[in-house]
Length: 115
Image (cartoon, rainbow, N blue to C red; front, side, top):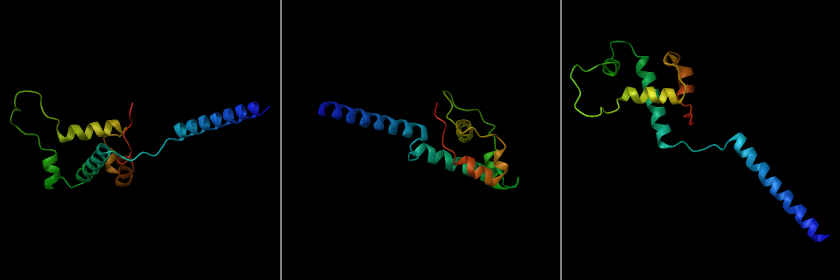
């Protein structure tokens, strides 16, 4: 009789543990942002800030400048704008969302969507 009670208690404990694990998986555990998330967030914040600047401002002119020289041989380095575009695609951002500052502030802080 006591053996049956002990087995029932063990089964109940296992079921409770499984339910807790399922709840954690469904709700999700808040994870600490990693360095890549922080860098991409700051990069997107700066991108939105510069894009909203007037056309004659120096940071905007530099960001939109295209050099006339040819690149060196070999694989080209990743440009800053390519990094911004990659961060926008991983966060499912639209190209013109930077126009609305409040919306951009909310969505640029969005975490990356891992596959």
